[in-house]
Length: 111
Length: 117
Image 1: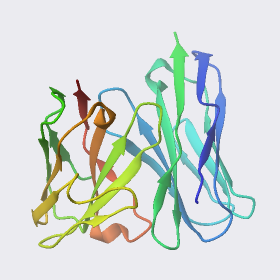
Image 2: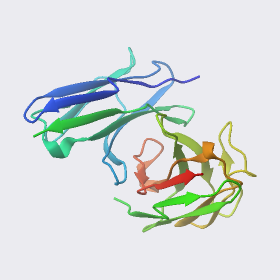
Image 3: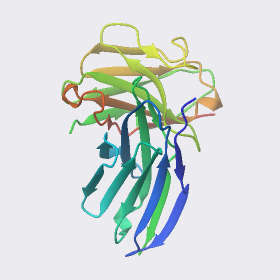
Image 4: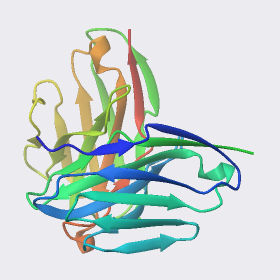
């Protein structure tokens, strides 16, 4: 059974704080790791697709790192803003093709 | 990015009835999928919608309960049959572009939130 674990489950921060959360996934049969942002009443939106060990990707104030050997990825948000409030999902794709989602980390940024 | 229109956005249904969710993609995509998120659970793949042939179901999901159609490259439907309260979930249509390859990101509809009484 492939397990994708995200922590913490939820997070409350003040505007301006930087934060990070973790996605753990199987270290074998790795193909790709996806991060999505899902705002309430909207579609989940892809942030990053990472395929190489050591990958670091950045989009504005959000960045992500990938360690496929130990099976984890970190998502960082620098200077959180209220509009960053959302659920952040990671998904692991194995080389058998299955995409397995974690339960998500729900971030609430208070003004 | 692909735009995915999904409807209905929400519905309240009676036990024993069936509901069909429609998904329209604005451009041709190679793969279309149906996911479910039950309360407090991860997004779980129900099936891959195959154009012109039977969908490919994941373990725990069967065609009689979740019949799926995909008559062309840009349209698919999911029916939730003989509903029970356990079917109360968000159902999401998603798609992947041909150019993205197997690692390509998924595009999602806004979801259909079903409540079964």
